[in-house]
Length: 454
Image (cartoon, rainbow, N blue to C red):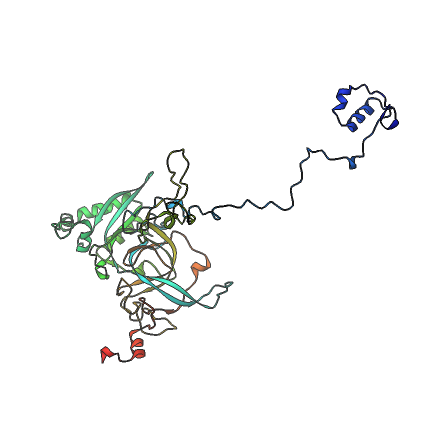
């Protein structure tokens, strides 16, 4: 007897097989075996129960992440690994590691200059930048003053291009060299015999045939010409007596013209306005301010641990796995901070001032007779008496530090780089405290006769 009072004919299947299968599937198979047989049909497809093996659809609202019961913030190392190792610079003066590409179609010119950081001040000007919210409005910008006494050319070096880079062929020095340059070649100038370059000067006295021969070798074999130039540190407020010496690449013109130009400028000075011009974008190379040995939080900016952390909280909690059994170089660690060699690029020259100009800090809008030195002098530097360069923003190093100014390696076409800057005001108030007066006359007029002056 079939289910529900109906008779079910045998389909030829084993009861063991049909007992473990879905009834509807069994009836469908039986119908396929004998089409004319009456079978038990299951519920329609749209009413059948879904199998438990079908996965459930994802919820429309994602599950909130599990809350941390300890630190609520994560902060790995803050700092680039591209500047490793963070150690003290090998040299005090910034080194030019790449000079601008030479273009012989341009006139002969130098590509770098030396200066000394005097301090900072601020300027006021109208911004000419269409589309900006500050367009045609006054803006206040911080600027850095770099004193640049004229440099003296004392030699020339020729380089040959090889598959492994440049190789110096020969060096030719001038006949007369100053004592401030000779001091650079001595550890203790006072106790020395001061015999540097005495034998070399005889080459010039004997007819200069040996010197001419070396210059001809440079013209014949070399592809790069650089001049040896030193700063005049005695003209600055620095106590130091040793001049800073560097090689400056000569670009423009042929090799023969470069060598002749260098020979003509032996023992002569070169001013800053012969190398750079106003509104030009330059790079500043120098050594940053030293901070000494610093912890990992100050050095790398890692997140401080919770307050109750055992044995200090300005640390890195985990510095690596058990194996490999060493600390990897990417882990933030304590050590030297500051006094690193850095190149700061794209500084716009706002002004190149002359040291003899009594109105080198005046503008078309501020006709006051004043010089760039603020009241009381630049803090920890003194008075700027030579030519100077005013660049936008800050630059590496402390005051009195020697800086290398280099022409930019790129051709700038952006609107910000090609903008013509017209300064309206240059601040010359005291930088020690809250300065109010721009000149000594303004201060005397406001305060009147003081008690000590009566």
